[in-house]
Picture (cartoon, rainbow, N blue to C red):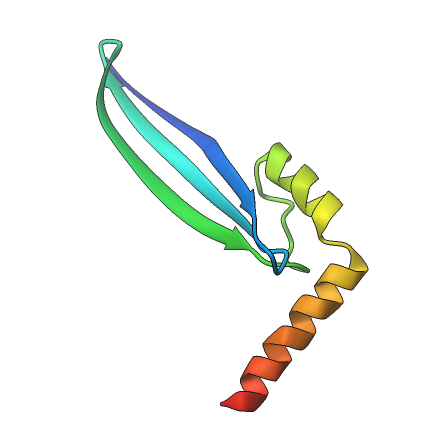
Length: 83
């Protein structure tokens, strides 16, 4: 019997307020792990995180203050202006 489990196994907040999320997918056959892979994505300040894991939502709610969102958006605009 095959079983697939997906878990958020790493959540990191970086200096600019982005929340990096790593999801681990494990496949078991008859109770024995036969496969494992990882997927990473980033939740930026101001981005809708309502579909994220509840722990990611809680971290975003705490970290993505109006000040952090404004600073992130200003930094992104400054990068666009340089191009």
